[in-house]
Length: 311
Image 1 (tube, rainbow, N blue to C red):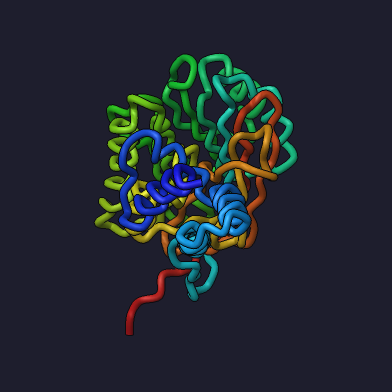
Image 2 (image 1 turned 120 degrees about the vertical axis):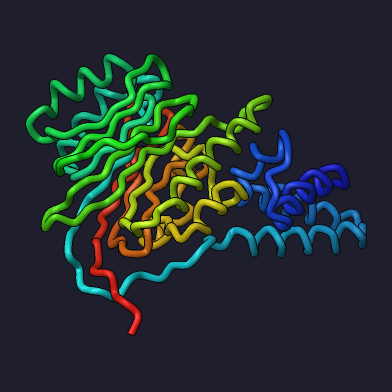
């Protein structure tokens, strides 16, 4: 019991002090809410064994872990008039294997912007053949395996530098929505925090944070993809601290798991996100199964609001 409480305590303390630390902490932080189960089991054993210190330890751990399962960040929405609406879909197709299953999902959901991670050469060719007319605009990083990614759009796109130097492709663009409203759109796919790569994962999430923060023109922003991070990771919270909002949180689905698909929605972690700047509201967020992929797709309905100037 003591060893189990000790392991959970290390993870919870790292969450409390806003640190991702080193392996295995980042990997366990992704599943922080699920640590409530072994903690509760340990507390029950402590009660049976009449281990008073263990009882106190278990109660404190349950309380602190439960506190941190609350959604992070603000859930406020803008008050200005709606000037444009956009449906966004993001999906990781796992080395392109889920492409065939994604195509009917896109046809059914009819998103305006589609962000596809791990879209290698065959995936990009298949999407071009299937959606050449519906999505005449695209911004892509060609690549094999997990390195390729693409943004498909109904709206005109002006390509940007994306996230230069990333291990896996992270293309970016400025989209012109209906009514001539410009929006920065950026695909996210940093390295996962696997043992030996935690530093790179942290660095690439930091690059996404820099992108979010460096917006002198205050252009509305959509940052979507597989972040390989949840709200329980400090590196991801720093992204939100730039002023971005998690659209799943805004739509009331803050803890819905997106990975691994084989256990979601019963268990897992939400590492696929659509983050938006403060000009957006979200009226719905749905996680959908995509066969042959280890991730669930995320579809969000967004509304862009007119910026309200301070009086």
